[in-house]
Amino acid sequence: MSEPRKAAVVLAIFSAPPHGVVFIERAAHLRHHAGQIGLPGGAMDPEDENDPKRTALREMEEEVGVAAERVDLVWEFSQLHPRVSNFIVTPFVAVVEPGPLAIDPSETAGVFSVPLATLLDEVRDDVMDIGAMQIETTMLDYDGRRIWGLTGRVLRMFVDEWNTNGSEMRTQIEQRLVSS
Image (cartoon, rainbow, N blue to C red; front, side, top):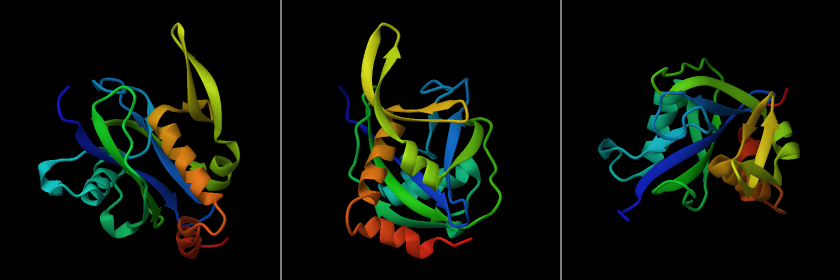
């Protein structure tokens, strides 16, 4: 097997209530993960100079039109290796200033957000049928969409860290959120 490619994703939380977490629906024509729900992110490019933070910020702008000036990366999780692709993915958590979103239709079919409170309450571990197989995965069902796979794993890491007593990540996020 060839050397894994590096990638980054961002669990982006809007600073304004209801503190929506940004998700994308990948375009149906893409070779990899077509039509799936995920977090903004993607493969590292040479201009990222081997820096996953640069990848995360570039992908936020390319996929959902959020310029780096609006993004405050507050947490970095350990790298993940997806079950079905040869990537090493670095997940980040960011607080994002309110503003417009603009999708790149060549990559993204749509963008939506899930309120932070909903995400924290409804992420669950379950078994899912895929063809003739059953897989254990973390998932979130929201507004007729199922979020699972690598994105589910990132959500589980996020919820577990959020619920850890004295979580530094939660403190960093809460300091940046605007109350209603």
